[in-house]
Picture 1 (tube, rainbow, N blue to C red):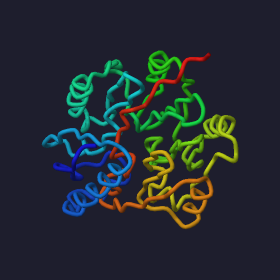
Picture 2 (picture 1 turned 120 degrees about the vertical axis):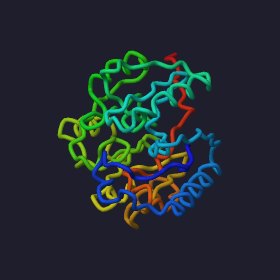
Picture 3 (picture 1 turned 120 degrees about the horizontal axis):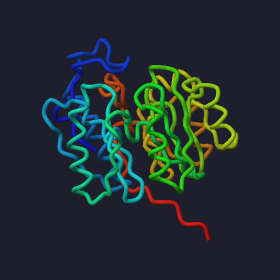
Length: 271
């Protein structure tokens, strides 16, 4: 995680930011971030990345890159406003001992915002359509050969990364908002994840960033979930923790966007 020391909305690079330029309650944002950090720290170790001046979106560490085993693939942002963050992420990954794989500068890729490991099958859900280009996918498939890379295309600009509309959960469950994906992508999802493992999120919950959740074992940490969604998650054995993150929603992010999981184990070799 990265503290919101320099967090603000200075520009518009997704639909949620529009109208919020200069309009954040920064004290509340700090309180909300600290609450999220403390809750996650009760279930997992949290390390922090130093915030840098004039880089307000560094707080959204899901977009630093994607980590799998000892490999880290840093992001190369589509919006020019975020490109100055890239050097800091590459340096941080190297300092932590990761094997850093760098995409060509001509290829857009926005890290764990658009690259999610399934928790039940051997799939690497990888998005494209808005902020990651499909040209990044062959590189990821080569670097993570023990995973089946499944390309899924986003069609609604409100859900510009797949982690805003999809969250793989422990036990092979999948929390997702089907209208955010095109037909072929929904087929790709639904032919891999059986119906009893799919938890569909409606438009109201999706708009509250319910899919942008942090899952640690049986715990699901999110901004807000309707009673119906909470009941569906509870029926699947999950414990829901709501953490208000209103100030970060104004920038187009929530719980998952504010975190990057660093302990993604490689799949065990076939016996």
